[in-house]
Amino acid sequence: MAYSPFQLNKRANIGSINPIQNEATGASVKQFVPQFSRWCAVKLRTMNQTYQLVSMQLQDTVDLIFRHDPLLQSGLQIQLEGVIYNILSVSPDESTDLERYDIVTIEKITKAGSTTNG
Image (cartoon, rainbow, N blue to C red):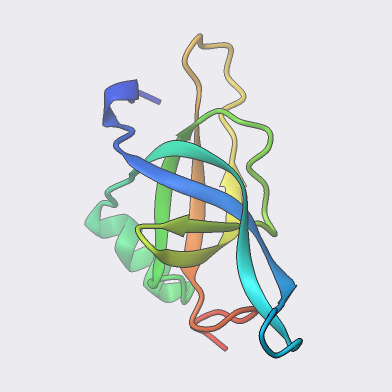
């Protein structure tokens, strides 16, 4: 893939949603807990790719580009610009290039533990 490290202009926190005890009430609430952060870029899609995603009901997803990192895995969440997303899939760059980039498909979470599709 032909990307430049200079294109990675957004900072993403990667972590999980965990139950955290509210000190005031003692109740347990689900909250995003970051584990690490990485620079990324939003990948623009062609019109053809957009039409294909509509047919698969994935039109509300976003693709991000990260430098290759085995820590990026499905099942984690990403916080980007204050919004939390589920990682739906990771397409790792398994080439032998010196600079390798992974494509991570994410979907916005409407409330902790669920996605926009329900």
